[in-house]
Length: 154
Image (cartoon, rainbow, N blue to C red; front, side, top):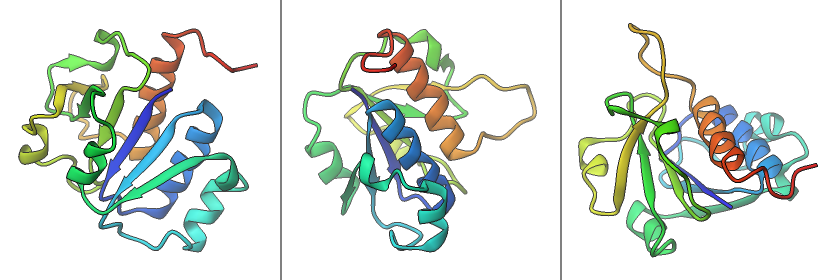
């Protein structure tokens, strides 16, 4: 139903956990190169357990190519610097949930990209910098899926 996009992810277990999450929700995980690891890395495989064959994962050489495959889809960029919460949006099937690399988040250039529909944040207590990438993707993906009644879930 939804597209989770990791721009230049760096930490293998985060991507492995995201693979498990998209397998569980029916979302597609888009990984935008360069990746900070090899997709066959043991830590990635271990975090993804046996869900790799059940997940839809697409690797793209750059952001332009990735967004070019999702023409007409809304793109929500997640940043701790946004003013709107992820729960302020009525998500639609096909929406793209864009997350940045673990150490830095999305750059100003990406946040200002003409394909970005809106910038959103996940609520946190003051003084906290960010959530773990895989956790952030799961929080937002499950909220988007919940808004549609968890189609396909049992």
